[in-house]
View (cartoon, helix red, strand yellow):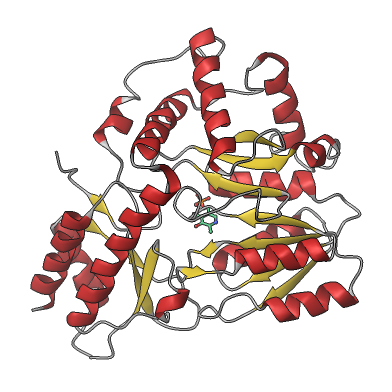
Length: 361
Ligand SMILES: *Cc1c(COP(=O)(O)O)cnc(C)c1O
């Protein structure tokens, strides 16, 4: 059954009927069956990065931003210093969070259509020994650009600093293996590439770093150390867990595994991305990014220069056919975005292109 709305956005996304059906029962948050469901989610998330005994998963209520803010607030000590790699809105958001919580913060900025500059990062870490942590956005959803996570991770590790990753729009579809990529923590959420519903995020963090973070956090609710401590004691959340969202998340993770895990999901998204890119090019639209920089997550197209093109009516025509796209978030160039993630496949991408073509004519 086709959903009424197909969301070609960066999230929330189109979900499977199985995920939505999983929300049809109520759970007592202190019951054994819920505790077991919750624990199995946390264990699966650790396995997705091959974190084994080194990493622990701490869930956090709210949208993805809550998990990112919890990660920065808990892991960067008050006398630490955070360097944020910025090439879009989500990098900038981490700078604002860290400044708001009073952590000394530096930004290393690149244009929105350029990946993080690893050579400059190396220089900055060489000259400033007071930087304790570096934060990166794996796929910067602003443009859809893929940042050089591996090179950044190796550079940060070589200088003996800790890497914090915002992998919100990458986790579950782009590779991340703790055995080969050194990092301290990664934050993501249920409702992007894992195809759950919105309402919960999580942070996978090295056990030793979490243990050393007691008292760091500026916030009671966002303190990952305390959140984990409660869960580790009796398997229960400190405060009301989003029970239905977690039940849906468990169903979404089962589908993820059925599809072949990260590699399987990557394959479907890469094919979706290829279909949209080729089709839109054929219809005269130009992508912002060069192909090697494009992650198969969301594609930014330049707003057509043709004065007869009106984005509002383009958007409305697609919406009337059940497709939701996203206005650009770029600061420099007028653009719009088409996502290729969520519970959608090649046939949905073809339908979307047909809607664009008819709308275009
Ligand atoms: C979606 C996203 C977030 C979190 O956004 P929320 O609206 O709070 O869920 C953070 N970082 C990146 C890179 C994202 O794509």
